[in-house]
Length: 118
Image (cartoon, rainbow, N blue to C red; front, side, top):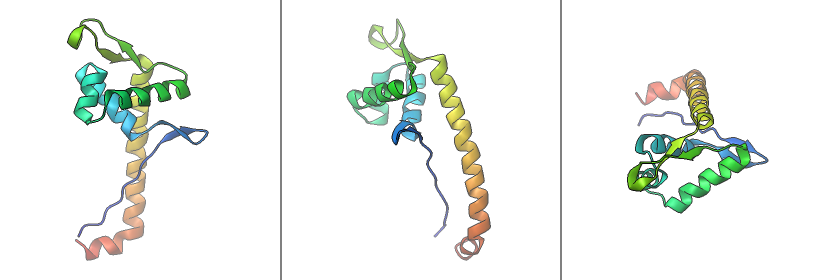
């Protein structure tokens, strides 16, 4: 058995999630697929659920995350706004930094457990 550590980070306001892992995954998939509908299908969530996530985040952030693209699948589509691109990048940078720090502390605090299970 190998012991490891996981952590999650959410951006919140008034105890309501503004942005986190799920919303980041949704934006990444929209960027790859070019549409909210295709991204939702790939993530195995309903379009309505995905749209609700984005609307809640946009409301709490005070800016749009998506703009519609003409000529995408079915004549429509979506692209991330520049602010959404920046948010996604900064969130990923924060996650990378946090995971690195958490892993360092985990190695320091749990070295004896890791050695027994190696």
